[in-house]
Structure formats: C-alpha cells, structure tokens
Amino acid sequence: MGRPHRDALFPRAAIDRLTRLVDIEPQVVAEDFDHVPELAAVEILITSWGCRPLDDAVLARMPSLKAVVHAAGSVKHHVTDACWDRGLHISTAAAANAVPVAEYTLAAILFANKRVLEIGGLYREHRNALDWASHFPGFGNYRRTIGLVGASLVGRRVLELLRPHDFDILLADPHLDPDAARSMGARLVELDELLAVSDIVSLHAPALPETYHLLDDRRLSLLRDGATLINTGRGSLVDTEALTAEALSGRIHAVLDVTEPEVLPAASPLYSLPNVLLTPHIAGSLGGELLRITRSALDEVERYCAGREFAYPVTRAALTTSA
View 1 (cartoon, one colour):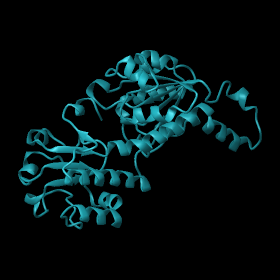
View 2 (cartoon, rainbow, N blue to C red):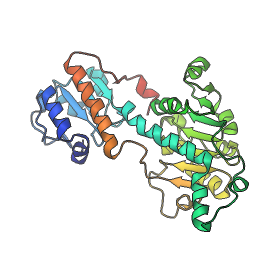
View 3 (cartoon, rainbow, N blue to C red):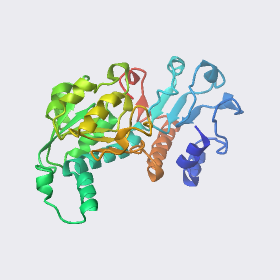
View 4 (cartoon, rainbow, N blue to C red):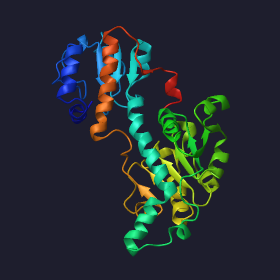
C-alpha cells in the first residue's frame, strides 16, 4: 500500500495490536515491492489501496506467502490469477467499507424524497416561508418506492437500513430468486420495471462488461418524472452523456458520488444544476471510518494466526460477479 494509506489505516494502537499478533517491522511499507528486503519470509501480506498486482514475478519473491488480507474493498486491482493458482487465502474488508456507503445512500434517499436540497436552496434564495407543498407536491418519505439495482454488500446493507422506514422496496439482480429477495425485505423485479415505477433508484451493481452503461439513454428515459437516481456504485454503470441530457431537462434528479470519468470536465453542467448533487467519491470510508477497516483487517490476521477461517474470504468464483 502507499505510505499515506498505511499512516491513515494503522495508527499507533493498531500497530501495537499488529506487533502482538505477528513478527513485523512496522516501519517497512512495501509501496512497490522492488525495494523491500526480506520478502522471502513473508507469510501474510496486508494490502490496501495502491497495491501493485501480485503477479508471478512478485509472488516468486514471496515463496512463503500464504494469505493476503486486504484493508480496503475490492481486490480485483491486485489479486491476479497467479494468486489463485498458488492457492493463497484472500480476505477483504469490503463489508466494513460497505457501511459508510450504505449510510450515505440512506441519507441521500431520505433527503431526496424530502427535497431537502431544493428546499434549502429556495429558502436561502427567498429567506422567507414558502408553500413547500405547492412547490413539491407529494414530497416526503411515507410509502415511497425505492428501487435498488444490485444485491451487493452495499446493496444488502442498504436494505437493512431501509427496514425501519415505510418504503416499498424493489430489487433488480439477475443472480437472485424471488425468495432470496423477499428474505431481504424486497420484491424482485426486472430492471426496466424497477426504473419505471421507483421514486428513487440506487445503483449497487459491480463494474463488469455486461453492466457497462447499464443505464443508457433508453433506460434513463424509463425513469418517472421527478425520480431521483443515486449512484454510489461505479461511474461506468451510467452513460454520462445521456444522464446529463436528462438532468438538463429538469425531468429527473441525481445524487452522484461516482461518475464516468471519475472527475467530470470542469465544463460539465452536472456541477451546477440545482437538481443534481455531485460529491467527489466520498461515500466510502474516510477519516475516522478507516478505523473500521483496520479493525476488520486485524481481526482477520488474528483469525489466521489462530488457525481459523477468515470471516470475509474472497473466492475466485465470487470475483466474476462482484466489484
């Protein structure tokens, strides 16, 4: 991992716990593997954002390596076929990272249905009481229809957070059956139906070849007037040009934490439209939330040292349908 990530993820207390579990030189951070001594003795590799791919050449320098504990979310960027061929045990803190993303999503849903951003803007502009119901007929959260696209770790966590609320929840996921969706508190429907009837559509699908521009111009046109699209998943799920056209029409609203490209051009209208909220990929773990990831990773190291199975293992097969 990059040294800044090490410093943010492993404060003194975490380093102290780690040194009680394993033999480690905590000042050594393998930012590129090329200038790190003693790799031959490494049995557990703790990785995070910025880890270079663990290919054949890298693994050849670590003949004792048996486990990779990822102190972040997706392992697709660094876990290669060579890792699986070697039989390495892989763990991820994706479940820990899913928590703040789901919290952000819940907040976005509640604020969007209540039209908080628009009302706040009008209140700032007029500095007087207005007839909010006439400006936003039917606004509020009671019995609104929420459509989730993808029962990923984040999607499932969002479903849990939605349970105390009076929502009708729809779920679109080609890998689920109706009973599984029902057990999560949702009704399984096809994606086109979900788009057409939901007040809020929230994206939690992985970035795969088959999900690239999953919401193209045709599918975006299915969204009902006044609906809100929330994307905390992957920017590539949405055709940015088509979304920009819909947002410019004022027909729909959007809350976008991820976009394609990751940082939109400065001239993009999405920065300034009153019906669009853009945030710079902040839904995931930041600041103090990183310590949840640290705890998850250290718990996995402790399990490994005790000869127990990982609580959050990653398998080769699972990576074909996950982020």
